[in-house]
Image (cartoon, rainbow over all chains, first blue to last red; front, side, top):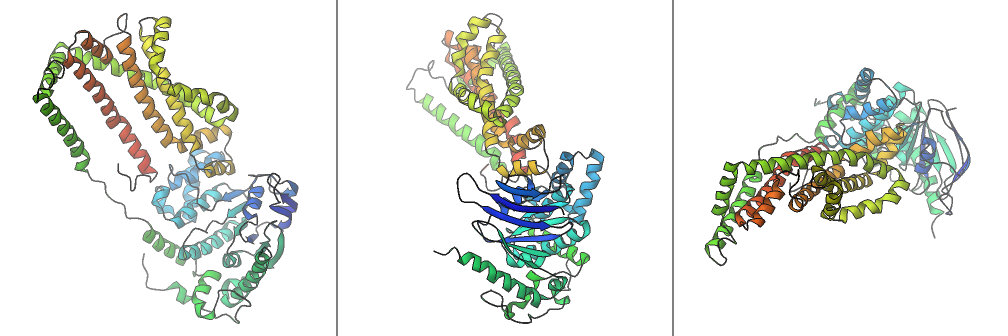
Length: 241
Length: 328
């Protein structure tokens, strides 16, 4: 099991806990969508898994070599070209110069951006930037890939395409993916399993399996989306004054 | 690669079997939209590649060719010409004595004389050489110190206020001390230049580092950068715009400090620089020499800005996509 979360809790200073008693197990090669409304500590949970923050209670088990991470905005370095951004990830991993070039070209080809390799981030569209960021996180060569609402800022057309793209790459590379989103449709579209996180404090309250049928049957997928949305709204209503 | 085939139409559109329960925004009328958002919307890798390629070319800006913008060259020249005409006009009114306020032609004549004597070339060369060498040494000293201060919190808390203070202290204030310590030698001049340039370069670098989006550091951490790698591969390039304005200011400070030092410290083994020329003009009560020296000091400053800093800065900002919409 690449990821095991046991009674995980997090509070900042003396404030109310952001995460409380989070339990989850994520299998190798699994694609899990972590769904929740704003303020449910989704990003905090992801940061803890990435080792960017420490939990205040509970235990977690993540792969010893750490995790790759993809941010909401591409967070590419503007002074580097697309290729150099990917190469930097390889360089910091200790990959030799000649191999870096070959590997970066391969990864950019994987995200269908071989032609844009020498362009700088500001010359790329939002969708292209996220694909470069995806290539960069794949360059880290970690089994676990954490994604923090990576498509939230994209337009709908681009997002739909990137969903297909991400699914394809997940299947090709066999990564374990934890994908944080506040978009129910996105969670159903991508996850094999959807975990719903409650808000304040964040806690896994329910989970759903998404089968292969949901990938091709819009009716079935729509139905599941409806069920999950209803449960999510129930969670939100609890906070009404 | 535009194609006539519509990938959405190729996949079987399945109407929702039943309307989803409770309040969701999905309706059967929007089946096409739901379809794309909820299920696979492309028919395979080749189709996906084509769609993406089409979208990429739609969403990327066409590359604009840069042309020589003549207004960039002609407007500054026109501005100088207008100022000279006003100057000439003022002189021709005869309000002040000619030896106190010489006209443009008188100064030009003095230029020619100084050039013929060779003292103009000597002064410019001496000062420029000192200014540049002093500045470069300052950069070499200030860069690692600035990076260290920016990255190590206790060091910054300890020395930050002092460095800011040094920037406020006019470096001329160091001239008497330098003369006492080093006598009338080049060391005095360089010392004053360092005291002017180093703090401002350090400050520029620190403020450049402060303005780095925090996410860059997170990315660095996630990518597994060590402390040194973080500083050299991520922090320094990210801080480059701020660092560059620190360098510009550092150059301005070294040039100013140099002039101040040359005016005050004359003689000994200190050669004949532009500051010395200025001082000579005062001693001889020759306003044309004074004005010549002032104009030369100004011209060197402008030339360094135009030939060194402006191209570097433009290139830097252009590569990061920061030039669009600016008035540069």
